[in-house]
Amino acid sequence: MELSDYLRVLRAHWTGVVALILASIAAAALFNLTQPKVYAANATGFVSAGNDSNPALGSVADTLAKSRAKSYVDIAQSRATAQGVIDELGLQASPSALIGNISVDQPLDTVLIKITARASTPLESQQLADAWVKALAKQVAQVENPSGKGRAALKVVPIEAAALPTAPISPRTKLNLLIGLVIGVLLGLAYALVRNQLDRRLRSASAVEKQFGVTVAGAIPAASDLSHDPGKPAAIAVQQRSAKLKQSESAEAFRKLRTNLQFMDVDNPPRVIVMTSPQQGDGKSTIAANLAAALAVTGERVTLLDGDLRRPTVAESFGLVEGAGLTDVLVGRVEVEDVAQYHPDYPNLRVLAAGGTPPNPSELLGSQTMRNLLRTLAEDTIVVVDAPPLLPVTDAAVLTAVADGAFVVISSGKTLDSELGAALGALEAVRGKALGVIFNRVARRDSASGGYYGVYYQSTARDDSSKERTAS
Image (tube, rainbow, N blue to C red; front, side, top):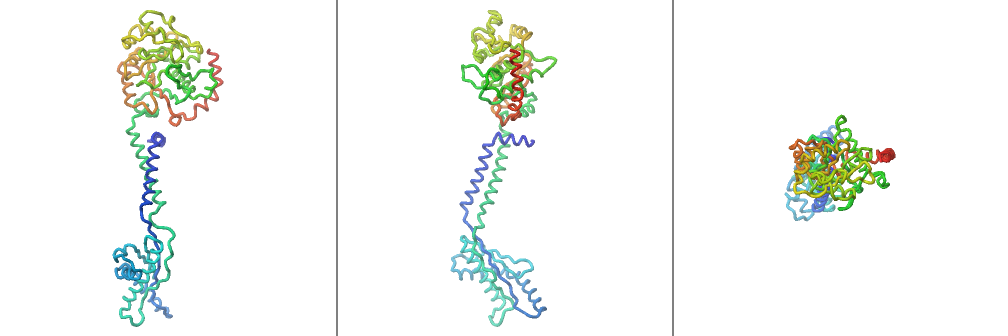
């Protein structure tokens, strides 16, 4: 996976990633609150060998002090020293338990012994460190001068009293929070990668092309100008009379789809195009209507045919009369010109509604009469057929078999790879050609074009508008 793939995965599952990061930080904060505070104080003792004016003897005494200081570390950690501290401070702890709160360090080549005492309060740690150095001095005195007569050769002298701690050494709040953050990021990344492996929803053109080997011919953004209420005409993004759609990203998306279609096969461009989808609700009818309009405004003669004989919507999409249509033509009741309707805003676009609902839609659409009709219509117009979804019924596959190919519309972030695979398999079973996949309702953050639509369209809006007026 490349960096862009990781970023795409994180964008797709960012809510779970953020939740895990916040949960890890909250767990670290809770750990900080539940842990007892521990304070540490440091006191220092000096191993003295007495004062001697003779330099040679002084050097020998210093060497002796350094060598013996290492042994005093064990004395400092003895139960006898701990008991002396307990007696002095009047503590209720056992010597073994108290030793666990002490650390003794003897820096290399020095005569210093550093005592670090830990306790639950700053004052207790300070008192414990000072008392421990004093108790160590008493134990060393007993070792070096058991009889108590005369002067001991070596002794421990407290030289630095413990300072009162200002902050606890445990829990380490900032470090724990940082660790919680790092763990949360790692868990979030792992979660996103696992979800990406388990998530079978299609979100990117690269995933479709890599998995199915099918070209992604277009990406239609999730835009408010394409939404419409049931029973009302669909929004036509390329409708030049609407000033509000001047900067429409969806209009530019359909222009790009139109261009991709025109350059798909320059020597033998498709003339009969089926628009279908794996499931109902992927927006194929809206895309079929907009593609037909986008082709019409360039001067191409277009016939938009409603091939969904079970749930027809084409006439409704343009606000036209449903009435008689395709089924009536196929049974020989009327001619195409008798029932074809021309859109008032697109003189080059004629619409053939579905007509009455037959008892056998698949047989009717796969008939020789349907083949002859499509062949006749394709002689002087580009035919766009709005077909039913592929998975519930076989109508779209039957139509694709007699057409030049089909566009399969999928919903970005909703259609499963298994659904698209089954839809393409249905086309392959009848030897139909998949012209490409169209991503519908693509969020701006998922669009490979980013902000391209708006920038490009601003510079070409006037030219396209003038072309449309000329074509009309």
